Length: 294
Ligand SMILES: O=C(O)C(=O)C[C@]1(C(=O)O)C=C[C@@H](O)C=C1
Image 1 (tube, protein in one colour):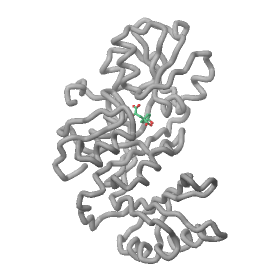
Image 2 (cartoon, helix red, strand yellow; image 1 turned 45 degrees about the vertical axis):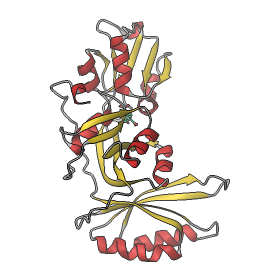
Image 3 (tube, rainbow, N blue to C red; image 1 turned 60 degrees about the vertical axis):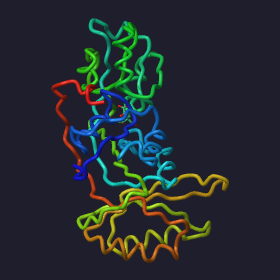
């Protein structure tokens, strides 16, 4: 949990969403949440100070990387201050009394729909991508959408009085989303003597062995590479930049690596040095609706 007092946290999504759950887990119950329709808005609000911190999903164990969010980090306007691994249980929610045979359409966030591919493929429902799992569930309730189901978590069912028409429809029980906590890039980075993870961004010359040399140095300093994500470089077709996450026991080994990387890379950015997150167990459903916190 964050130790600095925070006034408002920008999150992608609304009441009943997984971002809300992850934000409460990391930042606690006190700070107000600023719901945002897009990830870009989250980053903008943090960067320009309208929010004191932000939370953004970055990857999921079933649906993979959220590539546009790596591009947002590369803009350099925010820095990573922590990470949260949230177990994700997706359910098919509908108005009480509806049966599977009544359903014609299923609404949810695209990442949530992707996590439930094998279940949804068994039906000939129209799939509608929305901005949020929680908001999809809310619309089913407020607009009395008969024939529509939402893919969302149990917290959304609880909050909006919907029934679990089909529980646990995600494709694998080990369904986790990793979220990043964000602060403005301009804010002074606190010294974290216990830091054990870092996120870096760079590109290498388009020549044989350039990335391999970087990876060899990472291994040489005893750092554990936990993520390597390439992303396209605008204006340079088929050239790539790289985002890496590394874990270490002693921050000294990271600094040794950072001292060597400028000669092997271009545009090196340290996106954040932080504590690695814990794999949280399944969370209890909140006892009280949390919408009042916004
Ligand atoms: O729609 C939500 O509830 C969200 O918090 C978004 C989001 C995502 O961006 O991946 C978060 C976690 C789940 O993986 C599904 C959707």
